[in-house]
Structure formats: C-alpha cells, structure tokens
Length: 536
Image: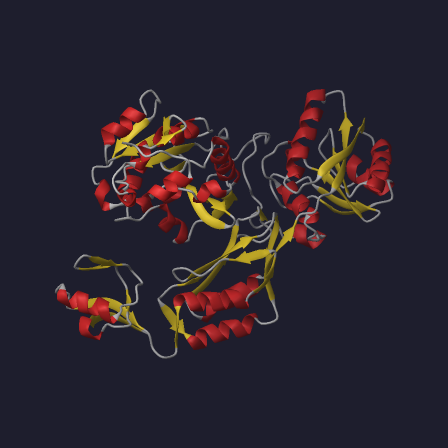
C-alpha cells in the first residue's frame, strides 16, 4: 500500500485519508474515489489528495478484519459486521469470559497494523457486552499478514463466554451475641442480589452457633440438595483450623485453600463436600461491592473450575480497593458516589426531510413531540435534562414551557449534529459522569427504557458507552461516559455519538429496549406511521 499525496488525475480507486469537498459534494474519509469523483475534484480546483493506493496483494481493512475475526475460534460470542476496519465481538449471554493470552499476544506481535483487544480474563460480562475487538490500523494490510494470523489461530479456541447456570444455593450463617439480626438479614439480601446475575437463588438457610459441629451438620444437610453451600462466619477466620474450615472437614468435605491474595477477600475458604463447592465467605461478602469472593463465585457458577493454583495466581490485580475496617487504612476512605447521568435532548435540527413542518412540534396525543420525549426523560432516573435548541428555538422553548429543563443554544445548527452535541456536553454540570444523548423525535422510547440504559451504565461503573438496540441492531439513545467528552469537541459536521461508539477504545454495552430504539419521525410517512400529526 502506498500512502501520501496523489495527483487527482491519478487518484481513481484510491482511498481518501481525510474528508474532502468537491464542489457541493462532501467525500468522507475512507471513501474510495470513483472516476466521477476525480472529475468533480478536478473541476473544483483540487490538484491532489492525500490517499492510500492499494497494491495487488493488499487486503481492504474491512475484509482483513472480517477474515481475521472469522478465523478466531470462540463460543458464546457473536461477531458483528466489519466497519471502519473494525470487527467487534459481543457476549451472547451473561457469564464469565476466558481468553488465551498467549495466542492474543502472538497475533499482536505479527504486525502492528493488526490488533486484537479483549476485556480482562475471567471478567463477569452481561449479554450484549463487547468482549473483544479486531482493529486494522491502516486502510489495508498485506494478504500475507492476514494469512499468517489466520494460520497461527487454526485449531485453537481463543476466547469464550461461559454462560452462567442457575444454581440452588444453601447458606449458613453463624451467630454470636455480638451479631445483630439485621446484619444476618442484610447478608441474605446481598447474597440473593449477588446470585441474581446468574439466575441462581438461595433455596435454604441455616443459622447456627459459631461452633464447628453445628456448622458441619448444616453443611452436610445443605450440600445434599443444593449445588453450592456458602458459609458466613460471625467471626473472621484467623487460622486454617478455625471454625469454618474445621466444619467443612468435619462434615466429610475437603478444604483446598484457606486465604486468597485478593483484597478485599483475603479470608475466603475454598472447599467441597460430595462434589459440591463449599465456600467460606470473607466478611467483605456481606457488602455488594466487588471483592475476591465474586471472582470465585462467578467462575464456579459459570462452570469454570477454580483450583488452589488458580487462587494463588490472583495476586496481580488482586488489590481491588481500600476498605474502612483496616486499623490503619493506607489512604483515607472516600464514600462511594452514585454515577450521575444527565440527559441531552437534541432539538436543534431543521427537519429538512419533513419538507417544511418542524417534526418536533408535531402533535402526539395532545402534546408536542418534543414535550412528550422531554417529559419521559424527566420521569426517568436522569439527574438533569439539557435541551439543545437551534432551528425555531423560540417555538421549541414555548413547547417546553414549565418543564424546568436547562437550555443550550446551538447557533451553528445548520452545520450538522456535531455542533448540537458539543453544545449539550458543554452545558452539563461538572459532576456529570455520563451524558444520555436523546433524539427529540423518538416517540417510542419510554421512561423505563431510559432507566434500563442508566442501570446498565451504573453496572459498568460509569466507564462504558451504553447503546440502545432493537433486535440486535444499533439504535438510540446512547450514554457517553465522561472519558469521551473531550472527543466530542473534535467532531465536525453532521457527525454524532455513533462516531464515538464506532471509534473503539471504550467498551460498548448494548441494551435491548425494543423497536422504540429504531423509530424516529424524519419523514411525513414515518410521522403518520408513528401516530403523529404534523404541526401547522
């Protein structure tokens, strides 16, 4: 592949490196120039373009990404179509992700133009979550590079999502005079919530004295009729012969490991009885926050074996967080803060495809469309709403009178979507962790749909892009995390959040919300089909 300036007369078939204007036509980056494009560029006075010319043995970026992704052996994973030299792979179901690191490293060492990235090994993932991506850096790569990567992956499973199985779980809680009933009740609720992500449930509970004999009897009874037994001690384990490990042995079971190099989670006990896992839960497992207990619990429920050696290897990356119960915390603990999501409702467009009327002022059940959408956003768990105006700004503001939203004006609304997105981001408060970008012309999205997206954003700790989908196809709204706000400022023209989603570098979580994710009212026919009445 040859890359650089090319005289326009020689540019037919070349791939543009940058967006270029030819008279009234705007040619996008990565567009392959046709003979007509070349004539229009010449007529517009363009003498040369920066482009890539492919050699006979080059493979186009999309084809290369698709071929490499297609050669990777995996299970529980869906491969998305190639776009902009990238193929994303998503989990088909909730479960635990495993990956062959050596094979990934081997691929990434072949040529820097080809990259494969994944989420962390043994990560707990949800259905629809992106778990891996294949990205071609330039517009094309030599076919020999593609062939070599395909050859080294042959016959090897490179990654998998091991689906959770719905297990019945028995729990034992030991009791001492110092332990309040409310603590035991909360522990059960937290455990039930922790198991819910895998569809598992607490089927039975025993509350016993903090004595090895009583605990051993409870383990024996619960292990007969359940897939797993969890034991929560009233007092922390301080020795491999303490009450909980002693009780597992006394019940006829085996203790494989007492302690793990993960903090919080140091005091976990891994054992079994009658082929059923028995876990002595560390004290931190009474909290819903991630800890070493989650790492072991999720793997077991997903059918991924956990051995003594596996636990011994968890030290790197095992320092998860500070906990306030240490006598001398290494750093002062800060209270956890809920991720704040503010909505940006885009209402600046000219409705050019409507042929005249402003679609946002169309009537839906006695309300203007923009008011209907905005009120649904306000009824959701969004922390605030910014409405971006532009075309017919005063009429849009009038339609929203009394809604108590913040307005941001995009005076450059005619240039496209990027300006509105920038105006919305700039208007957000400084503590906004995420921006839910809502199109003002989507009557099929309800408050519950917005809440589903916000919940997914919270589960991803506010670090992922969350996108609404319908039948597996991308749609709107989209939540952008604060980490991508600076990238918004680089957008130009009629480019919106989709560009940031497809650019890669940030994990994307897809949330199925139904057909509302793909219904907008850009045309008179679409408006009528959605049940709206055009504004006068």
